[in-house]
Image (cartoon, rainbow, N blue to C red; front, side, top):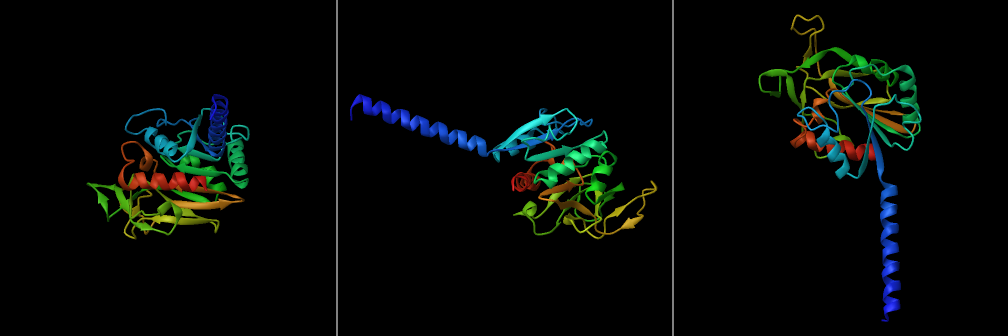
Length: 252
């Protein structure tokens, strides 16, 4: 082969590789982590309670990671495939809720991870989900001596629970589906309870949902009763597998 033909062949191969890389980049999906609602635990920090390990996990699963410290609007959600709101301490406003609902209706996916319930109340009510005013206390499968730290083993068949036998919660809130567009993915034992009046005694004892999944229009959402599941300190073993399943589910 002449030098000219070799040069042409190399250029053709380079062009093909560049085209393939461009195609792969185009096919990547983008996940936006909201940081505009008083969050203390962030993807860009490496503390025990931060989310840098979750961000790395998403990157390994092929996601492009973005963060936003702006109000959630239609414009902010442009070219975004999945939205994650974890550990909010400031309320999500009504205009933001409307933008989020439009985002889901058009085919976007949303993951909500609760540290406290009130900032999410109006958004969750709009999606037909309610949150308890007290944390879940478990009497089975406890982690250590604290009955608010426990394993969840009652898992329904779902993409989020693929190959998963359990996961761990470190202070979670009871979730309730209020309409048929929402389904239980995971729940506690029937011996778990909630204290509603602050006397540290059970007021309601039953199985409580810890993961709910729902559909609005063309899109889906998932609500986790505890944001600690995905924090650096706790994102290991079964919680890590749950994180991988989440990354895959959000992409679909």
